[in-house]
Length: 179
Image (tube, rainbow, N blue to C red; front, top):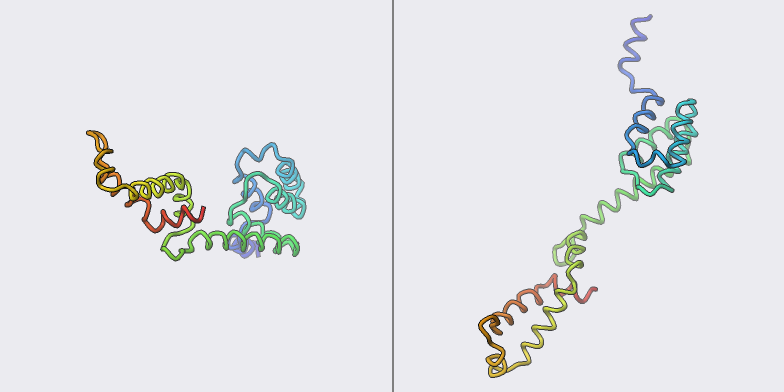
């Protein structure tokens, strides 16, 4: 019977205690001063699994650093195994929320850009706005006025072309009017 117990233990997944310890060890040292983290370490040491999980969930709710999807999945599985239905449901909601945010980021708009790419364009909206204004100003000049602006360092036709190239690129134009 002892041999079968060994095989049974060898094939089973790690205990709740080991999984919680591994989870706690995976956290950054920045949590060391957090009340909920300290409580969860203490509860884990005392083998109070329910309180350990609840403290970790509170840390995820009130902490300055957001938990990753993997952390919420592990907390969900642990809460589910112990029978903490409300905590498991909360973890499940967090997993769904993170998953929906990841999906949102990958969505493509009508111009074919993702949300993260548009945010990158939004950082330079003042530059694009300046290009639109400059191109409109240069468009109002006739050929004589453009010739008067010419100098060895400034070619108004080149400037007009460059301003048009930046200002009326669809994504840049959309960025200016969206912002």
